[in-house]
Length: 398
Ligand code: NI
Image (tube, rainbow, N blue to C red; front, side, top):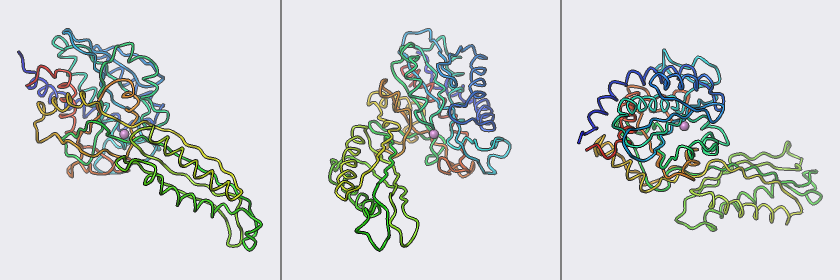
């Protein structure tokens, strides 16, 4: 039996310059969430060049299919394609820095796209030996609610192609190029935003008995929130409530009519987040009503938690151990309190999301995501594209 490991690695080397060129082109021409029109045309054109037809279930983004000639599963590989609404900086990106104001690829989605196009080229070349079918998802709007992943899933296109498993990656500046980080189970948290209005009755600061002070009520609420995580949740269950902003009042001698608070909740299931919501509302309600005031409370659910399927993660690590070697595969034992809309796919299809190392001093790419200097070490493509292809050739690599 042919060992596809060397074949795939050699092809990843061959397509390295191509991936760099794609990434730099996209980097220079970023488009924000739901506005990825040129990006979509570019990707469709690149896929057409190699004979991969695409469909557009949404206004932006596209899905392509590579049909193997051997029997096997239907596996989806996903890249997100949108940029952030911000300006960027950094000499390391001279020559391909964003030419647009208010748009920049400072989360590395340009690199995810380039990497998946590289993998598509490798897989297309090996089509006569390819087991099953590969569904390539170039997904718009990871950065914006309701999340492109949710809309792609709801469009029915993945169901139509009979997707059985799904994999995706994110560049990670905390690991070196060549490395990947994987974890079964909870990987990234769900995200929720909340807004609270505490409504009292304003008046003179010297006559508090004639007012209903919203600042006192808000202070009590925030203090009581501290008991939600510590006294409502199972102590082994990680979660966060943060009030990120509080605003009320305008002068020394005035009791204002209302106070406003906004913040975020993070947990590893929406069920836990909803339990937190229930408890928060009970606290807000009893505190305001007890003082004669009232309230408004909004709890805006964002992305669910990224929960990696055990079997898929095992498959991914097996492929990574074979393709990259044991020392390059980092098995994480703690999840991360950040969100990712890939979770919407995982609500329906078993899958695994992982990190691809992209941080180095040479490339000035150790800056955090969403930092204006954010950059990637492009050598990550050698690992990322080879691993994605290796995952498909799982049973033919040693
Ligand atoms: Ni991102």
